[in-house]
Structure formats: structure tokens, C-alpha cells
Amino acid sequence: MPQTHRTSVCIIGAGPAGLLLSQLLANAGVDSIVIDRRDRAYIEGRIRAGVLEQGTVDALTEAGVGDRMHREGLVHSGFDLAFDGDRHRIDIAALTGKSVLVYGQTEVTRDLFDKRMAEGGCFFFNVEDVTPGALKTHQPTVSFQHDGQPVTVTCDYVAGCDGFHGVSRKSIPADVLRTFERVYPFGWLGVLTERPPVSDELIYANHARGFALCSMRSATRSRYYLQCDADDDPENWSDDRFWDELRLRIGAEAAANLQTGPSFEKSIAPLRSFVAEPMRYGNLFLAGDAAHIVPPTGAKGLNLAVADVRLLARALAERYRSGSTTHIDSYSRIVLARVWKVERFSWQLSNLMHQFPDHTDFERKMQRAEFDYLVQSEAASKTIAENYVGLPLE
Ligand code: FAS
Ligand code: PHB
Image (cartoon, rainbow, N blue to C red; front, side, top):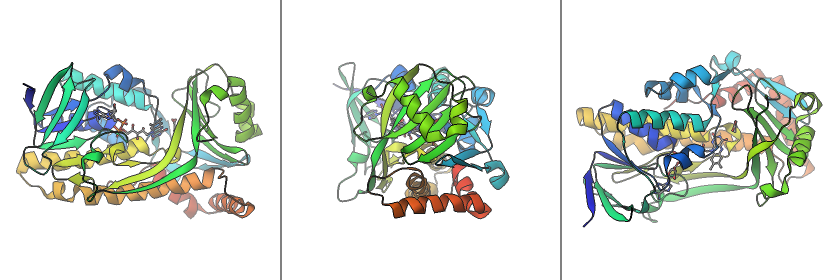
């Protein structure tokens, strides 16, 4: 006989989307159960995003998990775009009046877990065979195995926050679901090193040898990326080879400031643009990577997940507060309108900053001309800046 539980919202996935949704719902007096196929240590250990939009900072502050973020996060008012060593600073503060915060996703996840656990959040970790059911009814279910025992959660709503490889999106019938995808012919090789960053701000570099990104996690911990073949292996990259290649791609001025050290967390992430529509099916709602993926060039993945969750939490809290389903009924339409605009920006910046194997000299000239136009035109730089700091929620 399966264990049975009843809750208002069953959240599949305890990444940033699921955790933030659970906290925002709790703050609105709405109970939830969160399930994940991994455990907290594994989820917290995944090295991913590093830049938070103002909207994300606001959402985490509103959720009550902003104290350490505000203490330890690094406020950035601009970043550099470089092209074959020429650098152009996008002054996001002057162009938009906003800034971004450098604060790792691992820290965001830790802060959210700490808060949820302190408030007695209900979690099932290391679950298996997760199966959403009865999604078109008013009593949807999520069944799974936990510690070898069958468990069934009955709820009002299911939130699919289980990432790109999760089960939620796949629970939408094939004749309802529409997907859109662009797989890029390269990946990002990323490393961390306990050395001060090469620059106070991020540097995105397009070089004939390939893209490079200089980022950071703190004043003493740096994060670097190199464009690599999609099927490359981190084992092919000794630290010396990585640092030599990075120096070549970021230009002499930045290379002169590069402090290299032993790397850790050396890994390769594939790059894709992906969107699934609709983001609602019956009483299943998708949020975050379960519904969309962006290339990390625009630092949007985590921020887009947070924006989805802000809209979904608003819709569900309204339903429990007043009975109105206005925002529930408009969720998919409103959230997808923003998702596509963020997909566009991430795709555009990826096309500008990377070397593509099928590019001719003409396309490379177009990339250089676009960079030169950004340098010359405040209006052009402002479009980059307003997307980078984050578009309005709706
Ligand atoms: P997540 O994938 O973070 O979380 C989904 C959760 O669901 C996971 O904990 C998983 O264990 C769980 N799950 C999956 N299937 C399940 C099932 N069947 N049952 C139960 N649970 C299940 N974004 C940036 O902005 N900048 C970056 O530099 C960047 N780098 C990235 C590098 C990599 C390798 C990856 C994969 C992503 C990167 N991203 C980056 C994007 C990333 O930050 C995501 O946008 C962010 O994690 C999205 O959060 P969630 O939607 O919560 O999904
Ligand atoms: C990071 O620090 O991991 C990072 C920063 C900006 C990006 C992508 C990744 O666009």
C-alpha cells in the first residue's frame, strides 16, 4: 500500500526554481511538498550560474534569503566585450540605472535550502520513478519510489521544476507539446581557481581562436570559460593548456593581469537554445529549465528560472488568497512572451561572440562590424545593457 500525502502544490525538482517556488508559496501561506531525484549535497554542489539580475536579487530578498547574498555578492555596474583584443565596456549602470550581482548559483541554492529547512519545508530526496498523473483533474497526483517504498502525493497543482532532463515536460502529450531548439556546434569548458580575477568586471571575448569568458565568484575565486568542441573532453585540457589558450583569447592587456593557479571543477557544458510550449497543461505548470534552456552567454539561465517562478508563485498565491484564477489562466502566455525575448538576447550574444565552424570571412566581418557599431552607438550598447540587467517581468 503506498504512503499517501496531501498538499496544495507538489514541486518536482529542488533546484533554484523548485526551492524558490516553495519558499515564495510558504511566505504566501501555501503549503508544498518538494521532491528531487538527488540529495541536497549533490544539488548544492553543481557549479553553474554566477550573475544575478536585479529582478532575481529582488525575488530572493522578498523570499527572505537575501542577507548573505547582499553581504557577499559583488555589485557590478558594467562588463567588457572584447574582439580580437579590443575592449568595449558596456556601462550598464549609466545606460540602465541598474546593476547586476555576482553571486554563485551554489550560494543561492544553499541559502534557499537553509531557509526551507529552518521553516520545516517538506522534502523527499533520492526519489525514483517519478510519475505525474491525473493532470487534467482537480486532484493531480505525483507518484514515486522513496527508500524503496511507493509514495503518492495528491495535490491541487504540480510544478514541474525538474530541469531539462526531468519528467514534467514529458508528461505533456506529444500532440499538445511544441518544442523549438537550436544546438550550437560548440561547448564551454569551465574552470574555477582560487586566484583573484583578471579584472574587476566580467570580460566576454571573441577571438579568432574562439570565445572566452573571465568571470568570478569572489575577490579570491575566479571562474573562466573557453569555447571548445561540443564533443571535447576536459581530460584533454591540462591547466597549462587552458591558461595558455585563455591568454591568447583575452588579449595582451588582460593576459598581463591573469593570475593562474590549480584549476578545479573543470567541466564542459553543451550550448543549446530550447523552448517548450505551452508551460501549462491542466494543473501542471513548468518553470525554469524544465521548459527552456538558453546558452549561458547572456547569463540568463538561472535568472529566467527565477522570473518564471515569480510569475507562477503570484498566480498560485492569488488562487489560494482570493480564488481568482486570472494569473493561473494567463501564466503560460505571459511567461512565454518573456522567455522568447530572453532566448533572443542569449542567441544574439552567442552569435556575436563565438567562432562558428561554418562561418565564412563575411560572417566574421559582420561580427566585427557589430562590435564596432556597439562601440560607436550608445543606443546599440543600451540594447545589450537593458537585456543583460534583466527585462521587465511582463
Ligand atoms: P535545475 O536543473 O537546476 O534543477 C532541476 C532539479 O530537478 C535538479 O535538482 C534535478 O535533480 C531534479 N530532477 C530532474 N529530474 C527529476 C525527476 N525525474 N524527479 C525528481 N527530480 C528531478 N545559467 C547561467 O545563468 N549561467 C551559467 O553559467 C550557467 N551554467 C550552466 C552550466 C551547466 C552545466 C548547466 C546544466 C546549466 C547552467 N546554467 C547556467 C543554467 C542553470 O543555471 C539553470 O538555468 C538553472 O539551474 C535552472 O534551475 P532549475 O530550473 O531549478 O533547474
Ligand atoms: C559565471 O560566472 O559562471 C558566468 C557569468 C556570466 C555568464 C555565464 C557564466 O554569462
